[in-house]
Image 1 (cartoon, rainbow, N blue to C red):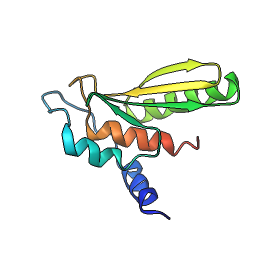
Image 2 (cartoon, helix red, strand yellow; image 1 turned 30 degrees about the vertical axis):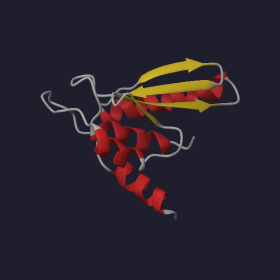
Image 3 (cartoon, rainbow, N blue to C red; image 1 turned 180 degrees about the vertical axis):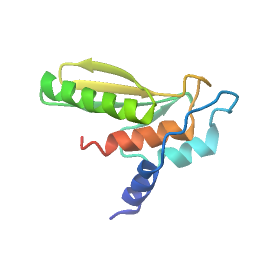
Length: 117
């Protein structure tokens, strides 16, 4: 297992912790450190949110993936913005309560990557 795979697994094993507000959003080097623990394709955008686009063969596969992400979101109590189109799903993650990124956003992203896409 490559070093990156080990880090992904470790991050995915953590729990999403609800933010109580007042927690400062992550910035700078901490964002870079956490982003290296995610699989390819995840982008930190303006130090505010994470984005990743997933491609599929057809609408059905994209819809099935969307439903898996939805179930994961309910189980983790961490809800991404989801854009669904024919053969494409785009996820946007951030912690709405603080209008920025927390470690839980990265944990959720790592858990999405474990869904198998």
